[in-house]
Every structure is written in structure tokens, then in C-alpha cells.
Image 1 (cartoon, rainbow, N blue to C red):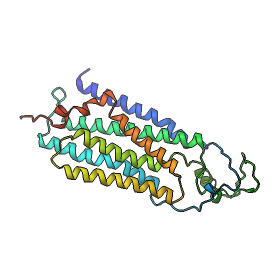
Image 2: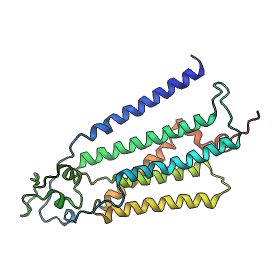
Image 3: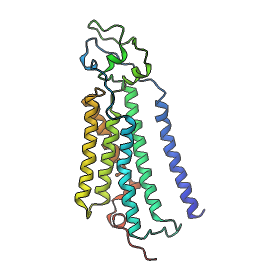
Image 4: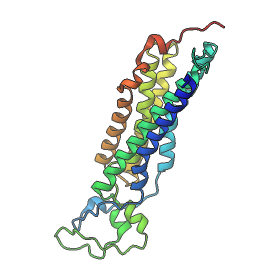
Length: 264
């Protein structure tokens, strides 16, 4: 098999791997969360329901765009600066291999993170702060723990959504995106000419991630422990990518951070 054939086979294997770990994530969308009970008079689940300041779709988009945008811009710039060097055996521009590796790492990390977050949500079944308003339980009196809750609300989807407070998916997405970006810039470009610009971008995405986390508490969709756990999972998922041996080349400042110029 020639080199191009080996590359295509490797790509197919890695795409298949991403598809395999995506299967349980998709399957979780069709499962019901654990039916956790509550104590009547519990004020922690009696908050009013508010609309999302930041939707989960927007949070996911921002989380993915935060690292991918600078990766594409900077990697293409480096390739342009070095006159788009090519792989010696396949004659394919190295920029395609570079971007493929980064996109693959980002995709694997993000899908794994979402799988961990959703497993936690479905398994723990934590009630959101607005659960009582979403559920409208038939009985909310007495002092004994109610293991079985008879909700009178007709919105089954909202009731299910009110049972998946822990951990926060929003916090996991945006903090993961911020952490991935910061790790990438710090490890990939330890000696950067535009130090202030790099620091400004890192600070901006970190502050935005912090803002999104605060809105989740302000909107009564999460508690502080949900946010903290989601943020911690996001940081760990991002940090793990840079510790995997297969991406150790990211740390090679001599061969990767400052590519050797190729003469034509």
C-alpha cells in the first residue's frame, strides 16, 4: 500500500472511532433521567423559571469556535509564511495534516466531554432550581421525602429537562473551549511576538466563559455545584488532549512551533 493509501486508511479508522464514541451520546438523547424525588417545601427547587440568556446551541458553537478559529488562522499563516511545505512522501501540503490532527483532537475531546456530561445528567437526575414550576406536583405538602412525583404539567419535555441539572453542559462547553484555546496558544506558541494580543484573546474568552457560567445561576437553571463540576470537567477534558502521547508533537517547539522554511 502506498503512502496516500495508508493516510486514507488512517483517516477512516479515526473517523470510525469518533462515530463509535458518538453512538452512546446519541443513545442518551432517547433515555429518561433518573427519577429523583424531593422533600416538600424544598426552597432550592422553587425558583421561577427564566429563559436561557445563552442557549445550549450557542454555548456549543462558541465552545467549538473558540479553539478552532485561532487554530485555522495561525496554522494557515505559518504554512503561508513557510511557502506551504509538502510532505516528502505524499507531496500533500503539510497544512492539511496539521489541521486534520488539530480538528481530530478537538472533535475527540468535545465528544468525550459531552458523553461524560450527559452520563452524569441522566444518572444523577438532579432537579433544577425551577423544578416545581416545571413539574407542578400534585402533592407538595408534608415533611416526608416523596420518592415518586406525580407531575400535573402537560409539558413532558420540560419536566424531563428539569431533571438534568448536574453537571452543567453550558459550563462544560464554554470552559472547555476557553481552556483548549489557552492551552493551544501557550503550548503551541510559547514565544510569540504578539504577547499582548495573545493575552488579550485568552483573557477575553476566559471572561466570556465566566459570564456564561454566571448566567446559568442567574437564569435559575443551575446551582454553583453544577457550574463548578461542569467547568472542572471542561478543563480536564481540554488538558487531557495535550497529555496524550499521540499529540506529543504539539509540545515540540523546535519542529512545530517554528516550522523550518522549505526551499522550492
